[in-house]
Length: 232
Image (tube, rainbow, N blue to C red):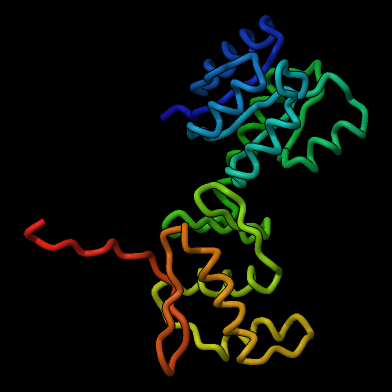
């Protein structure tokens, strides 16, 4: 099966040449020349990798990159830039790019870099985990609910990570205390109750619940739909 690739490049001649070259290398390539359109397509469609030009009209490539990274943290993205200055390359990597190429470049190098990115994405363990509409990126230390970032404190995020690592299994307060205790600060059982209470409220729209199992601990699971009367 061909690798599904998304290309955003404002130079029409270069975009056409890239699309032809990549298609010959067994990439199924969709291409646009506008930044705002690129963002909308990337947010609503799945691709194996992205080639993103920095100098796009209507929305620059770095802005597109930052927005995509908030919603698809593990998507391999390579940026193209006409400037080979260190500052722009660093800005692209800081915004979330996995690799970059400066123009002009050889098509063979682009293909090789894309193959390397795809290998890396398949080999590295997935740091992103999802339950219901809740998504957690351990590597990025972020969580989303319905594709909106969750505002979590460092300790709330740690508690969520522990619960997500034990989906459908009971986690004791003592386990959570042990994990939080690695942060070189005293943590009591009462504090755990506070963190869990805050998390519950923030996770309400996500379709997941933290159940208290009396005498044991906490259980994170998908929220069950409410039963309806058979006669209704």
